[in-house]
Image 1 (cartoon, rainbow, N blue to C red):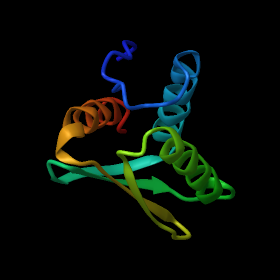
Image 2: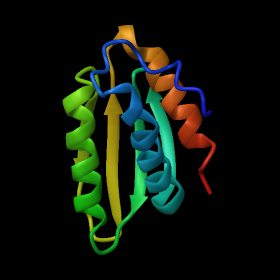
Image 3: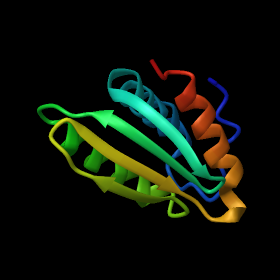
Length: 109
């Protein structure tokens, strides 16, 4: 999904930086995603393979994303082997989570 039309207007990340941020998420998912589930329409749960520096990478990306897209709520669960990442949105942003889930499912091993 190279088209970024799904990015909502409420995102404050400058337009020229959006493809770079999407690429960071894509790289994280393609390198580390081991499982994903959608326990509720407004929540996405991801398991990421741990390793040196992975938790810091996840926390940094989550912090930066929270700064520009305040409609996301991120919850991380640290672990040695697996880092849990839960992403939640409000009902007005379900389509954004749908797009993220579809993008994530596309890179799942």
